[in-house]
Length: 530
Image 1 (cartoon, rainbow, N blue to C red):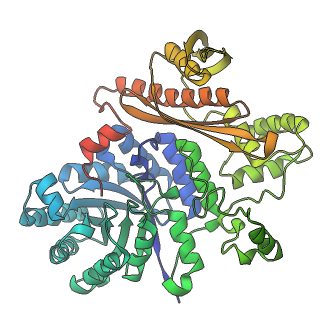
Image 2: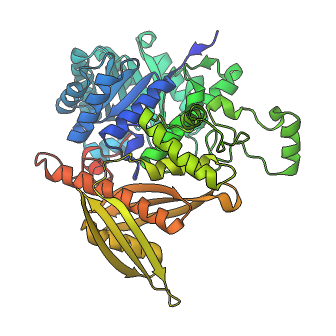
Image 3: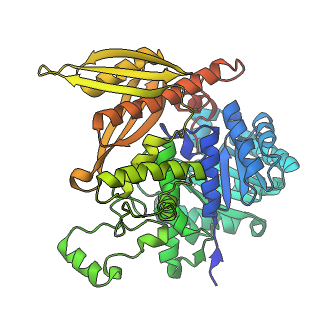
């Protein structure tokens, strides 16, 4: 019988730390609900000491999501641990996850502490956390570059102090597979009391080895894996949950483990995270990318038509990816529409379904077929998923032969409509500047991408924008048949996020200036990560 592998999802903590992937409390709750539907075993809900917003989000998730273990991160000190427990104590199954760097590189250059001091800190932190919570995880940060004998000492100190899970992170994605596997084998063999402790992986993708190393850790004895939806996370990201789960599903004969993940919720989870963060997955992304089940080469198409197993080791239906073979049209009903939205990762309320159905029938009267891309566009255009301080009421742009463009924008706020115009080198930039003039919070474009979605002239444009407002990056994403309007709406979405957070911070004098801990807050509260 295969052994059960625990899936520890850190999308809401390590994943959310990646630039442009911040989520507010309601968005975190929405993502946590989807992770619960996915049947993740442990949800790491956040890092409560980082900000009041993170603390509140962890507490809200702990109060609502009752099936999985809810974990919160804390550095190896009493203040962090108390703050984590304050957020977690209402959870049905709480876990305090404390960490401390153990590599000589981190000890010398970051902590400025001796090995003996770090051992004492581990013993105190784990022991203190265990006095509050029966489930305690310890991570020796940068375990992959830690002297092996010293790593064994650190793990022994944690186990003696009461750790129930030992996580061995490859913090900087440095390890090769045999090295990572051997580290688990050594700790399992050399640390007394390991029969009472679960070993866990935590890998980063700096060299593109995060998933491979996670599987190596499993072969070395790990029975918990830490991963994120779409592989988001610090720098190049974490091990992608969907890739790890499906590798185990397809190759359980070789790995000897199984998970309790509901695979049909993988694609909806990926789509929801994309919608909440505005960060799209690459087209050739394994398992959930748009091209993961696309076949263009004639020989591949011929094979798939004869038998899909010739070129598909996973059925798209297995991961919840809808087939575009069935296209909705004007004769489709509400039930079919609701089902398709669920497959795309949208859980709409009854009033939202009615609104979507009205927009859908209007579009179906104009188009022969309505594709998934159109349905996503209807939701993006017709519903508010973020607290909107400003709503776009009018957008017009005029371009001239000399390359200059003028955009006129009307935004509504609190029942009042404000209109302004701006001129710039292109219609998109003119629209951004007009929005800045109204919101009084100018942003600088960090990243701007446009993707076409759907076939031929029926296709739509997906615009994803990352913009920096007062030193913090926020993302916006919008889909429309009009590229320039989609860009303006995506930029406004990012501006709304910025205005909302900056206003919320200004109204709370005891909060740090960047509650979404993008770059500055991470550096301040979480040096190095793990």
